[in-house]
Image (cartoon, rainbow, N blue to C red):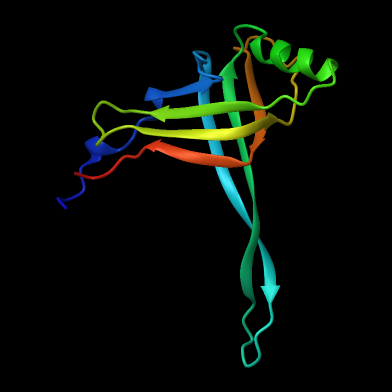
Length: 145
């Protein structure tokens, strides 16, 4: 592998978010992470705390410039109808200088908050919607050539 080349650092400006297959142009950021849950495993002869993975929690958030009521309407109508809203989110990141694109599909996404209003004088409106997910899959990976 050649030396470090800063041109290949990924610039989030080229990120895109797709919700149910539709590009969310107002998205300005997306974060998704998996937190592992552990059970303690006792081990004679060791003072260390040994652990075994027992589950996981998928959590994330989408940050968007407030342009319309898309998220509020999407969630509000389903919640008021007594339905559990579940979605598929795809994160795409493809910097023109990078080694390729990274696409991750987040499955069984459920938004855990519904922002009805959030604004302040002399500020561009922004909404951050937190969500959970139960599965994911890499569709494309960035790999060094």
